[in-house]
Image (tube, helix red, strand yellow):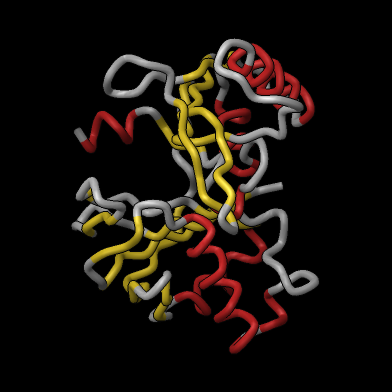
Length: 219
């Protein structure tokens, strides 16, 4: 299956730092109101991936949007034109923070032999700091095998040099996961991993992979 990515510039000032679930809810809400045929049994299709929106954190649970902040949305190529038209100029209410999607662009994900994801989650039987990394990486490799992607998964590090343990809040529940790097990808597998994602909660910004070069360019 071929995938395309829709990117939109934003008009707005701020967002909650943890906004993955709220962004998904806002997209679903406008679909129900204006174009319910885009939904699959009242939800976004499992083939759709949403990225969280980057910004400048204020350390108090808010991010400030800047000229690098983008709304990013991946879907099967045959659905891209319909979503492109629908998303253009939509206003999203994300827990009281309003943003407008403007200047949409359609693109292919950028291929790279190294991809990164800010947060990947799996349903582990139990979570403790000693054993979680082993079971998490085991789940990563099994998930890569299931989608027939050849690559080596690593848990990323944060700016302090520690394991990139992160969380997303979904309906008052904190879901834990790690930042992930996958290396050794060929072009086809790089596109496949970006189109299919990895792990769960992919409508909420989890499992969204991007070229490691994006971080270098943003630095």
